[in-house]
Length: 331
Image 1 (cartoon, helix red, strand yellow):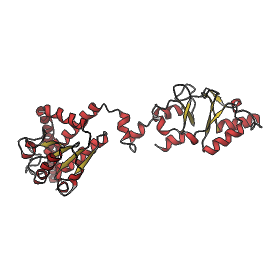
Image 2: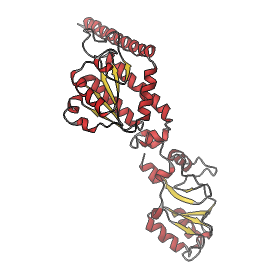
Image 3: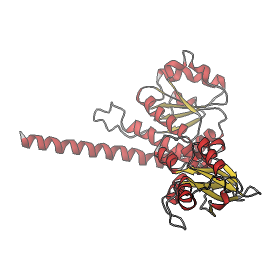
Image 4: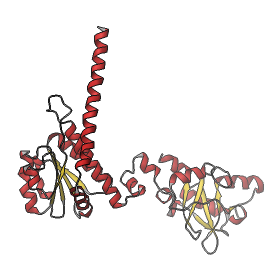
């Protein structure tokens, strides 16, 4: 029994490796057949003033939903449409400014062919991802991308395996080419993924700093008592102190208050300039929040851990305040 089990396990591994070989070969073969049609497809999607509407039946439809999700994640307005639903009213969502991406291995899928004439009548651009470049779908499309495969990884040649992998790879190739065409920056990508780790990593100081009522700013002559009230009202841990021209003069924190009381006792009526930290460490609003966290954890010229970090513009005017609690709160 044990030996048979081991032989079975080995045969499973052999099958799996063969699947990988077939699918890898199918993807590599796509590269040899790429033509100017791919460039035209990228440019058409890039120039699209409407949305990219992705459509496919069965397994290609599932691959289409992944391609559409990838497009959305790089800032290309897009939606998935089921071809059967399309001819029962959903085609009302299609406009002449849209690009329709139709996925069909055979290019003869009945539900797909039924909506093609309507798409053409509306005036949307039709791009086909098909394994049959001479099929009905291909003939009626504006741009054809050949995703044909020599064979499926399924030994019966029935289950879509290599063919759907090829479609997926072509969709990824389009998306990556569009990232280059759009000159998409990591910050823009993060904008579409605010809840993810990447989004947190690429958040800027300006996105998380406290401003307005949550960021008390006082003049150098303001009495300590009034500064304390301002900090309390804002539920903040510090106040920014500015000179008469509105430029940063210092910072006054809860910790400074305790130290001042211990040293001087009656300080409530004294001006804040006597107790503030002069020339505090600052950061610009365009810096990444993760950089700010490093600074606050001690990676700064003074080597001090900071609970609050003033945010200043190029002219050293305060525009916000970072609180370490907020940074930790967003992960």
